[in-house]
Image (cartoon, rainbow, N blue to C red):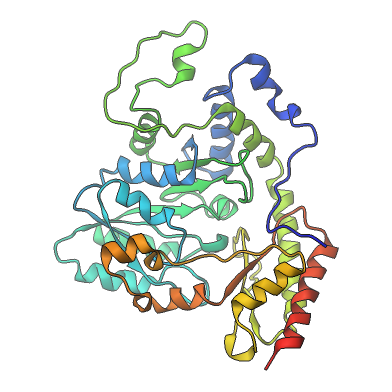
Length: 384
């Protein structure tokens, strides 16, 4: 059996979702993007949504809209994908990395408070928390901390579209529609959601070269062609082709989420027999998006390493991944800032012990049971 780590769901006839754009000839930012933004705004209970070409773009523009720049610092978790941190570097700001909680992978707010208390010169201007795998963090506590220290909160919700929908948008939020996310806009895509009109207007302008009008406004029939570039911007806009995929995917988000939860429950039941594996907790009504199902290998109970377990799963046709190599262990960051692997011990430990198993709605029960039974067999043959 061959089970890829992820496989998105598209209609058999792709033309059914693309024909409006291809027939009209309007394939870049236009009416479909506008409609996708409206649907997302409704789903998220957010006043403003700006569709973009990636979550990285949303994070970058979110910081830029608040004027984060040279000499500033921002807090971010070490245990995340590098995009969470690199966006501040684009603007000349320096990251202040924080370790995570071992149980849920999310940023350790105790350590955040400790860092802020020591920031006597008020250099730290923002914090970028991550909803790791879609699990909510203690946003009430974080918002309280942010208010106390006058911090801008930019939430990295790349894993957490459904989580944000249920919690409602309280800060500025960056979302991802990359190929392996819970919904995709055809491979690449993202959005920024906010209730701040000023942030929304700034991000929209910066997303398209700093131009005062987007292409849809300038080139639709009857529109005036004149425009102005009022500040240095970027090229981060979403296309109508991408938005067409997103609109189709968004229609299925509730049923797909229900299927994800079914798979999570099956994994949890089947893998509970393995003493050498620590499974993620399933908490009913937790507002978890379940973008990822990540197990922790308890190394002292195995004869073989985590990497050898991955190899054996791959040999049986099962796609896997590892989320993530911590930011401070990548050469760019340890060369620039002098980090050592031991600086963030929990992040390091997790990166050496976790395995992400396939989790997507196209999986059938036979595939889920095959993955679980394969892992059980590996355990039975290699336990101490």
